[in-house]
Image (cartoon, rainbow, N blue to C red; front, top):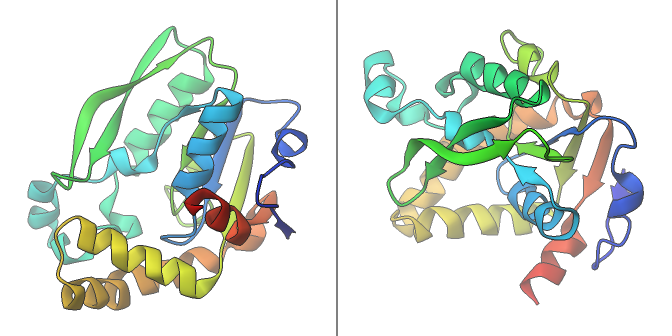
Length: 209
């Protein structure tokens, strides 16, 4: 495990010398989006979040999964893998979906990914799961980093995120315990499958300062 310094000066030396498809994974609130944004700002990465492949609420209702939203089975995994394959093949323009948190719904065709992009970062919880069909996603990635952070900080972030998007403090705590908690255990159980484990605790402090 490597603990990033506050200014993340190590990042250029960590980026893969060969291959352009980098995955970031880790438990909810570990800092995946923060690191992806930093890679975009400093290294020109194009970011394709896995969250755009959330199944819409109407489909979750049909499957009886509305209360499990965010779990591994609530994503369009095959669609995600297919889009990453198109990006990997350097199609001139691929339009990826994004997740609109104000709506809590995916929005199609919102993120342009151009064939000339030299670094493409996709971040999501389940990139390393061995259960099918998740290995189809991993097959499109050259490198995967698993990120961790201080546990108290991670839980604090999760609660704040849920409340920022409309949940009461009690609802936020219940969701973290019922959904985010078990998901985090599942994700951490496969951390050893990552090419690199990064501790972002100091980066989180740096970002907030």
